[in-house]
Length: 259
Image (cartoon, rainbow, N blue to C red; front, side):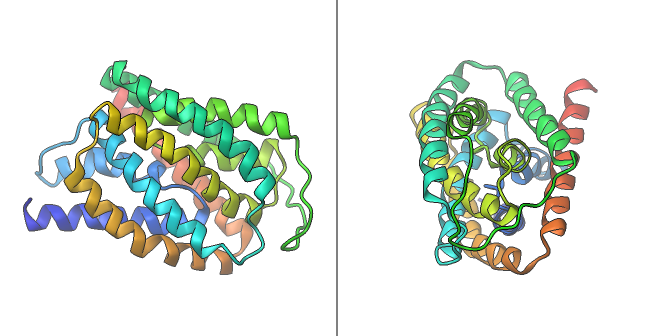
């Protein structure tokens, strides 16, 4: 691979992973469009949607490990929520990751655009922040959490994401989970989801390992830095950063599909 191409892929991975660690997402909401469009704009060979999904799946697996590690002593990782949502999203992402092989390129993009649109709408809905202290007991609707995680896993597995960009607004708006608990716990659930997604992409030979390795290296450096920064930021700022990122991505993908 050309050195300039390696630098471009590394920067995409670094920027996306820093933001993902900061706002509690796996990073595919940012890196999917960046990988899809930036290399071709700069004159490099363009990735297909399936290749982008495969690279994203492997990268998210490592990015979320780093993010969760940064939160391990924070008191915001809720094990009960992780078990309920993680088990359901793993089953869904395995099915979606494997089934994506049978979808056309424009269908993969359309699934991604629909997910991003739903997430964007939910992020702009009014939310009341729930007071929470680290280690405090958390109450939530377990069957609803598992059901929504299963559906999210199937859709996320198709696009090579781990689903955090839709999980985060679901946890904030539907399940009424406090923001910092959502950010930390969604990283853990996303890690579990990424196992199923990655296995599905590898089994169906949708992964380009060279770019994936570059993205992984960038993720391992940037995700913990982003997680540390996120722990120090105002909750409202974190919510707006995530909302604007999701909205911008939804607009870009829909413009490509429709125009």
